[in-house]
Length: 83
Image (cartoon, rainbow, N blue to C red; front, side):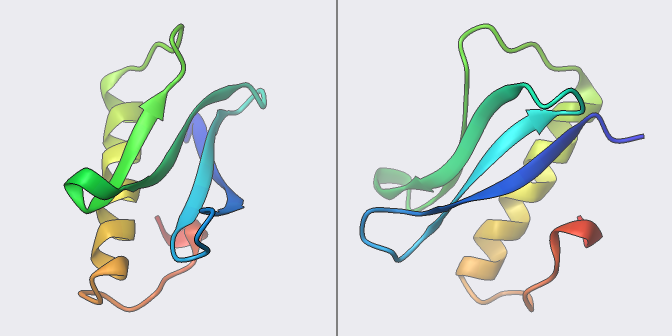
């Protein structure tokens, strides 16, 4: 069972990269995933009071890695349901 989901929020101010909200099954906002220019990759920024177990962290890591691979054209674009 998945306890978190990724909801596309929109794009960056430049329109070049995407932003996703990370929410739990109750709809509570846990943080967001966006492009972090200094590191030249997508990263996860949690809210201050968020708590995660290993499974949630793995789901977040897998999603961020997939988005980085897509951005760098290493893998074909897949739907969020496949993650």
